[in-house]
Length: 447
Image 1: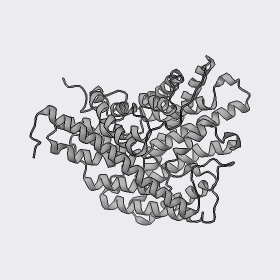
Image 2: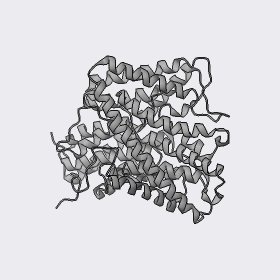
Image 3: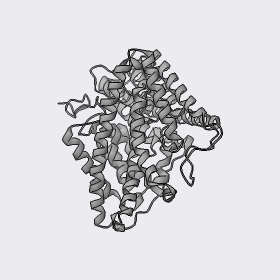
Image 4: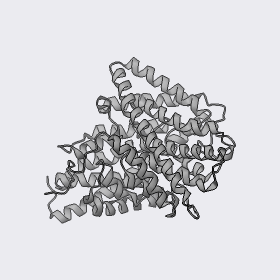
């Protein structure tokens, strides 16, 4: 049944519906994830998983329950995934939505979409290492793909609104509303930008941002920072950070896509094989989390502490090096245990801690202060790792700027993200296998 109205009115209603679904989806996701994390904290006897301590370490009398919760998270995510059909496809939420938007048919069964979202939230809420974009892409994209056609919208408009809705939801999650349009334009293609999303993306992001901030308020992810004068030598820092970030991005992609899928392929035929993998990942995750809780759940709360240098002097170098390595390994292993989680959040953690470790090593080597402040180096790596391998360079530059409320560092971000993107581009790599080239995308300019 088509929505009886003109094309303009139908598109206007589509914008409103998309913005509301994106905003409500983010609110529900935040509420649910916070409730599960609070339950986890109370169960293991920890007041906060992200807290300023002399040495980042979990302490409490019931920490033995942590591996139990993580294993339960894996088990529940597996059951939900099997029942909804997600496990049979073996794809992450964001990549699945990208595949649908770029595919010949715009179809995504609602059980699969909600199953992925619910399973992802359960996994993250019980401490599994991962990112939020997988579950939120399905929680927002699934309803949009199923409900927008009822408004009488053409397939091209449905694809466009789904891209804008997912971009708006991710922008809300990372407190970066200006990035909503950029994510919608970059996330679904590789090496280009979909200009068709600009106008609807602005409107949809504004609506979603209004819903989200009405409930949770809005503030920068990190906080307002002042970087002072940027010395010319800092551009050399940006180049070095870009090279390292590009290499990390390629390694991250290899581990997630190549190694992770091989483990999934070998374990999918029998439950006992999956159980062995899930138990192994649980033991490794909880073991590392006892001394480095930064590896639990999304972990984005640690980004602010690292960039601000709140406890950096009390953190040993081995911890700064352990966290990004552990995040990379655990995220890939968690995906191999079929937890439908995202890869964006861990990439931000990996980049931030790698930047902090690079800054610490430079300080130990007595490199001049003009090399760059801790906040500068950490933020460059924060943006460059996923900006390159996710093929969303503009989006990550803007997210980094909005995270600090400062434009001073913009030139350095452009250099670092640009260098990292060139390295990844020359290898023709991306972490999202369903991304299309701009010319092959159904949202490419007509004619």
